[in-house]
Image (tube, helix red, strand yellow):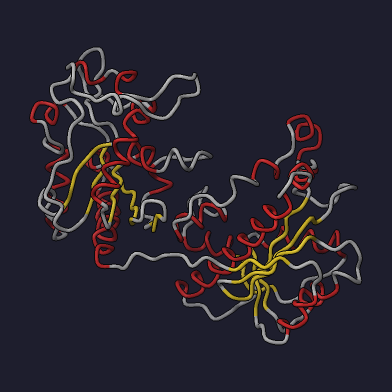
Length: 414
């Protein structure tokens, strides 16, 4: 196979052991009939399907979806009005056939998927599909796993979401792999068809772009007095020194308030009762609905540290997320921001400082003090923290408005 791969193609991102993810390091290409299988299909409807890996039949014929699993996928898509090879372009998370020592098909390893990722992302960039259907966990790992590094989970967590991925500029729709569907009952088949139909319908849906909000830093809280006269509801967010406020030394470090979807006020938290009065007046105003993600957190910190009782809680976007989908691991704000708005990371610069160090966490558990002071001591650290807090408030507001519309609710207090 000398000359089949260019030097550039043999390179990829670094592995933890200092080596690189590459075709040469992976080595699957050495023992297959169809190395680095090319995309296949006419792509008439701008749909990209990403499967797991070529099987024995696919490797022999040099194109994807040639065996029993492929026939199931082709037949099901035809029932939904889509031709697998005319309307779609087809690739896999692993582009060479992985097989066991005995010659049987097997699931590709994480290293093999990582070695193929750069090529997969290049195909996405080249074809610019309107919709990308991820068939199974390996495809999720390939397209999402390197960006969503914490608690990725399996296909059962991701299937069914229609994600307007802002990095890839495509709708991402994870669904069960057809090989799994073929082994399960009719209920799984029904779910699979519903998920595929949702993906197909998105071809005609305009891809949404998120408007960048104005996050306004304020040193005194007088603007909150002015906006109070015109607001009916607000989302707000705290950044604090830990999870639980009861331990001495804990404090609210900064806060942000959003009353519309594209503007938030963010401020370092005043030390005196007089300075923070414009904010606490908002919290105590029963005519203004309050929204947050996991309202227990803000409510507890407000009661313990400010000795203020929040009036008129109106919406908890975490509880609403659970009402909409009761699977575990899907209700966090970061997960909801990705699956609902397609933004996979707005917190990586700040997130490490919101965790306690190992010894502190082991000794004090939920009362541990985090590393936020380290961020504040850095040049530009306070601005990063305020921006992050402002984004949290914006996303809480946008998520709440989206949920209220989808659930067809009038404002009701929790």
